[in-house]
Image (cartoon, rainbow, N blue to C red; front, side):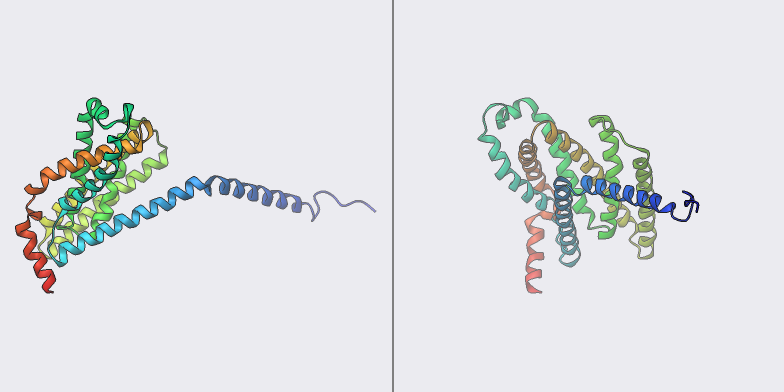
Length: 265
């Protein structure tokens, strides 16, 4: 009797087992690269940050619509004061090149520009909630991604793949669509100009955020996280403190009647 030919019915089984083994090996390699402690920690911290940003957005929109309390600069001023009390004071007690005075002597003007960009980014974004919707602000805020990529290309010498540029094109298309939809929706209720102002403020704030984030990445990687937070806390407090009395929306004469009205409700 002749032996079974290798091309017989049982031949595909070793091939199938080999393909399954290769697939399992691929899954193990992907799992080993994706499910590491650093990546999981980054994802968790990113989600916590997203929740904080979402909370800020919702409360800002609620205060603007329900109680007519528009305090964009005051909200930023409190944050910068907290950074100042923790990280700037920490730099003041350091020695050597990490001391606050040494840093100010060498790079004071750079941190003034950084603080100005960060303060105004926070201000215009919170201000935008007075003119446009929460959804529009959150969606248009993604405009910072292409701006950040462009700045990273020239400043940080980052390089991107074709898929990144495709994603940026989709992002810009979505931004244009969202602005157009807001304008059309605003015309229906006679608030088109206010909505457009809000959208422009969001795009401006997203661009300033991109500048701040690129500078942040450079300082954190090349210098230290404490230096960035300390100097932003210092100049952010000074700049927002100077701008605070000049902004009509946070004057005590304006805020006090609103607070009394809220208590009465």
